[in-house]
Amino acid sequence: MLTHRALADADIPHICGFPRDRLELYYLFPRANWPLTPEQIRESLDIRRDPTVILRGDTVVGYANFATFDEGLSASLGNVSVAPSARGTGVAKHILHVMMDRAFAHHRLPELVLRCFNTNTPALVLYGKLGFVPVAIEERTTPWGERIGLFTLRMDRAVWEGRHREATRAAA
Image (cartoon, rainbow, N blue to C red; front, top):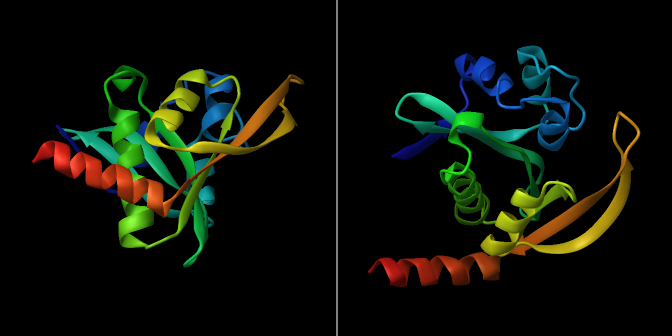
């Protein structure tokens, strides 16, 4: 069973182990340097909002936050990550639902956006299944010189509410 709560300082070393290499770190946290350190995460918290962890029992298996937050208007989802041992088990979908609920039900935002690199196919497919749609793409250059596309995807409140109603009806 998966649960969630606010990030605690003791969780940070566990999150540092989520990216297995520099490419995964780039997907998770493009401004960070390999290897990810607790100090890099702690410094990022000054500009992040609602840092949230997903737990399986007492083990931290997922993490996300809002990278940007414009009160009453929009937020962007950031640092979405899953422990390597928990990938493919529904943790990513769970944390996305938690963060969408937080954006739309708790903060009452009209939209939620996220950014994802074109080479992160599993994430792009999941975002599409959840109702995010691409609205922009821009070219970036990785720290190792590779050209890469950065998609901006968006979900508005009406899409979330419709999917939320469908899920509620299906569960009844």
